Length: 210
Image (tube, rainbow, N blue to C red):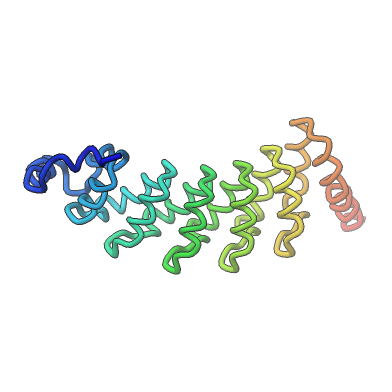
């Protein structure tokens, strides 16, 4: 099927493109339906404007082909807005985009205090959490093992167990909070899992007070 935008000559498109702001955001709807319009936009607009908003938008919408093209644009910052591209892709479960970003050496997967793995854990995106754990730059214990707490709080049992298998995670730090969240949700599997650490902490506390 022919591209619907190929019916117009390039001279016409130059006139049309002049009507849009230089950051290219107004051109995004055309880029969704036409690859030729997308390539035209890459050469005409500056997608680094507004703190690389175009890349952040593409990661949020799960538009892998657009993310791939934008990463080839040297003007675009893949770590814009405190690592918003990797953070939003992880939070929304866009596996292909997360892979793409992790393979780009410029991308910091630990940006914003390792928010990517934390949001992926909260959202139940098991494969993304697995990929992030395999990257040595990612620290799952960041912010007192917040990833573990968010996974437990949202009933992500598989992710909780995956995180607990990582030696960098200290289960005792978040045991009480994870236990309470699991009790509130009625998640018996996690209640039993965290109960031993809660009881151990209690025994230790009593010993120290004696």
